[in-house]
Each structure stands twice: as structure tokens, then as C-alpha cells.
Image (cartoon, rainbow, N blue to C red; front, side):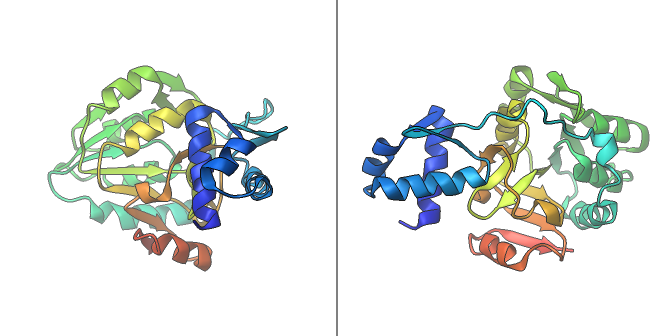
Length: 255
């Protein structure tokens, strides 16, 4: 087993159990305790766990962490996000039902869809509902739930119960981190389960991510990189990381 494969499996164990033990992991993977300790050290550097005596725990987000609200992030790397949105919009075919996740790049995708009246848009993002209710022509289905103010999105149990019963042609979402080994990661653990449900309602998941997201690893591991069918980013994303993603049979489009 390659080191990267073992580390991904360690992260999966941690996701499922909340904690892991060095002795148990060494037995599970038939490697030395020193090898496991090195794995945990490397994973910790990417903020995916917190090492403890004899094992590791899921990381706890700093109480001082404060995410910029969506509206204040709209101007960050705007030109990149617009290019990504213009590349994604033509991928949506006539009569398709799509899910647009929350975030700034997906909001730019929504702006590119104003004139479409031949598709249906589902979303849990208040920003997208507002945008398309004023300027769009297509039917819109909003997903309710608990309001996450910073992201202007609906998350939690109520949203998840609705989402898990859906099936759509395409899911278009952004992610805080897109890494070939550590997968798709997000910043807020509260939206983790909602994001996982969204990724599960289509076989055609399109990740929209500016170049700063490629190679970044955030606090919460949402899914393996193979959950994505297509990743749309920009041409200044790190070429080695892009190649590592493509080597896993994922289409990467750079604009």
C-alpha cells in the first residue's frame, strides 16, 4: 500500500470513529508504530487531525476563526471565478435539473444562467435564490434548513432530509480545498454532512475552484477527490497537483 493510500484510509477511520489509536492502526495496516506516527504527523500538518498521546483526534476549529461572508468574497479573484462560470454554464444541457451549491463561484455560475428557461435549478443558497428569482427565467426549488449566515446557505438536518431524497442531472459546488490525496475539504464542520449529502445526489459532480483551492486542505474532509467527475479551475493552478488529480480519472478543465 502506498503511503498516500494509507493516509487516506487513516483519515477515513478518523471520520468514522472520531479518534484513532497508533497501536490499532499499526496492526490494521501491518506497519510499524513509527510509520503510523509519521503518517499522523504529516496529516496533522494539513490540519486534518490533532495528535494526542498514543493516537489522534479530529481537529477542533479555532474559536477565533472567522470566515469572510459570501458578499465580501465576491470580489476576491473575481476574474478567475467569472472565467470558471463561463466555462461551466455551457455544460448544462437542455431540460436538465441541476443543484447549485453555496459560495461565490457558484453564484457567478448562476449569473451566467439568467437567460436559461429550459433548466431547473435546485439550491440551498439564499444568494442564488435571490439572484435567479430577480434575474433568472427558470424554475427554482429552494432547500430549507438552518441558516448559516456567513455563507448565506441552508444546512443541517432539515436540509439533509430533503437533499437525500433528490436525484439531479448535475451537481455544481465549490470547495475550500481540492487536494489529490486528501480530497475535497471544507472549512466549517457544521456544513460537512450537508455537503456530503449534496455530493451524493448525482453521478455528475462538477467542482468549481479557483487556483488557490487546488492543493489547499481545510479542516473538514468532505469526500475523496474521486467524488468529483469534473473539476473546473484556472490555468495557474499548480501543474503537478492538476496532473495528480487527472491520474485518478478525473477531468480537470483549466480556463
